[in-house]
Length: 372
Image 1 (cartoon, one colour):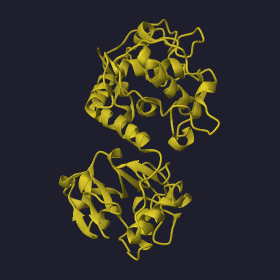
Image 2 (cartoon, rainbow, N blue to C red):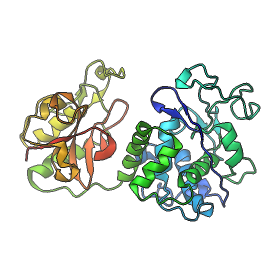
Image 3 (cartoon, helix red, strand yellow):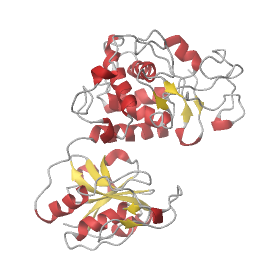
Image 4 (cartoon, one colour):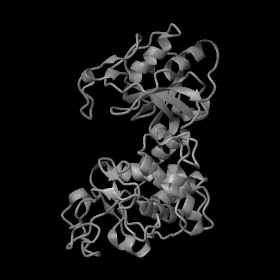
């Protein structure tokens, strides 16, 4: 099955095949009075996902075994990880109560012009029905199906009598069935990575999707906070959850405005918050430790833990580093504080807030440092 490149960081434009139909998990049935959807201990707000899209991911995960009985481990986090990369959970679009998305989501025109890296034209296969283009195809919907494959395999996920890639439930169920293949065990990390790779033949894409899945899997209660100075550092960082990321912002005294500008263009001077090293400065100051300002400089503090020792060498309270070259501290670009149980707290990037992430959320682990 051929797949084509997309614009920007989305990597390769996927051509997905899937089929399913089963009793729908309606939004009303998916919600509980406590705010978290049934089948999940995490709320949509905590996950940073629009509620109606979150409900669609639950629907897809719930229906899949009716069509792939041997599938194990399909969960909302997997579908959310894919849709995060493909459409940022239908960002900028309205999702109705029935799951219909307005305006529709379409990818670049696959006319062989080179846009998005596509150099082989894909002639129209749906008469413009789903992509509003009767000459060439475009990927469609929050999971970016090609019209031909969705026409062949898409089913009515919300049981409204219509089948559309522009319906969140229909698209989520189709993606779930495709990822399950003939009956994968998605609880096995290697099988999960292999499934995502079939969805898009790019290992960079796989890493991007997996970072989202790992973050969603990590949501919930944080590991127990130790006592003493280590506990003081961790507790100080945990109390800053929800504070915005500010490029150059924050320090030993707490959140502050930053500077202009981040590589993505954020003017930290307009945001009160923390960047990654500002957060660690604040937390360690609570234990009387004054850290250097940048992540790269902080790597020289304390006892260095090499990346080659693996994540298992980390202990709660350690600094966790990420760099373009794991053996060269000068390339370190990010730092967090290890919490234990494979989790860290960090200020991830512009547009996000201080939060708990898995240490696998970023691919370029560069070891750690122990100060306490």
